[in-house]
Image (cartoon, rainbow, N blue to C red; front, side, top):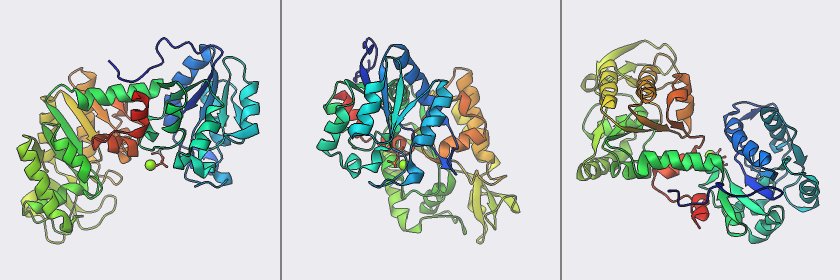
Length: 397
Ligand code: 3PG
Ligand code: MG
């Protein structure tokens, strides 16, 4: 059972529903790039509109820090949303005050409006009570559908939940349920794959995961720091030599928690960081002094794919190699496809998220078959760190 209020059984007909979405999408030259966040938001909006809500969508866009920066207007995003919805969307050029009130008051049941960028007001990020009160005037109930902003304690993500009757939107609900299944009450054995360049940004995350999962696979540049901590010579590979002691602490913590840390046993070693660079397959103990490990090697891939077969649950964050440059995407692609295949066959529950991960899974053509791919970057990482996200905590109320 969810310990937050969902929209189940809530009568929204004729009510002004103030819905915090995350429409912070990539934009270039006024055109929305990846529309995933919009697409994921749409079904929840349609459900509410079709139930007769007067829907008022609020969101931030970029980091204008309280200034009305024209490039950070939500107007093009509202247009992209209308296109995805296949319905008109009204637009107010401010999120509070008369401009907002006029548009909200003009809504008929089932109509949708988007209000201008919340972060045009510095008070948003300060969670200023006066600003919360201004926003609250625009709604009868508050729906937070922005899991990917739940690590921010801002007026629209936290403050409003204390001011109006508050509910988790459908996307928030789906994220919380998927993440809960993967880490709060998972089926064991649980494997976590954590990759990416550096451990310095993921220390809390690794510390939390070793206490929760049975196997922690470390890949990408991060693996080199752990290898070096074990005395392996990683040549010129990316490695945080100042964090070897920290890596050893994580080994000790893992041992105490009965978590196996899985490191690469071989790698693709090159002398330059570029696509199709000359490379050799090298045992992890034989890396040349001037070599760089840019991907996990074939033995590691076989090992990981085999391990996955006996896992029930997988949590994935970060690539296993330099996946942006072929052929150093090989390990990421192979293991992602194995996870997707096992998931599709009903043998694995797989959840992924955070920064580069979605791009990596998409590159592997594996994202569609994962149980759940989170739209969140920073919020997913903080969740992996075991932190209570303020936006979620406020909904538990
Ligand atoms: C994101 O893109 O991660 C969210 O929209 C949060 O944005 P922020 O990092 O600017 O708070
Ligand atoms: Mg961010």
